[in-house]
Image (cartoon, rainbow, N blue to C red):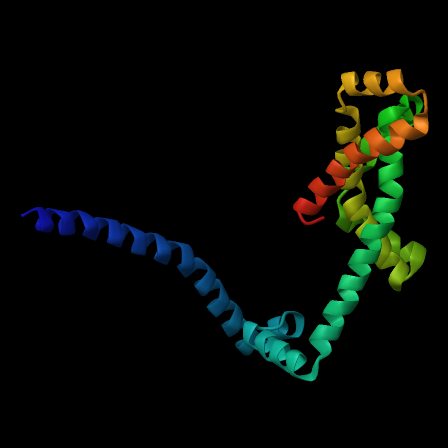
Length: 199
């Protein structure tokens, strides 16, 4: 009797789970099928957007001849180079803004003004200023990552406990010691936070 009740209770749960899976998958499957049919039957769509089947064939061909790996390596190289440039520029500016009030008054309004601009809006300007070579790509990577790194490092610096700063100043008046042993470790937390989110 108890086994029958348990099996009756389990069936609705199984059916509800199956219904949720079907509901979550039928829309993407329907979109892919429609996309494939339009890409095969409509010449206008075929000339603008590749069908999923053509994308899969191109991917297999690219993996077979090694072009996909080389393209991925080139993209990764540009992304890492842009990230290094961002770290080299954003971290010192954020530390200066977090520790020196004059820099904060100068930089924070500019960052707040430019930050809401979509990175896509910078692409025409990057191409106009720097062409379609490596420099324009690095500029886009820099724009995408700069504000996140700057704000995270700035937040980490201004959140350094005042007690810790006072103790450090009590034992040594050296600003270099304060920078190397207090401010930089605090700013590293902001950089690691950006890395955690994939930036």
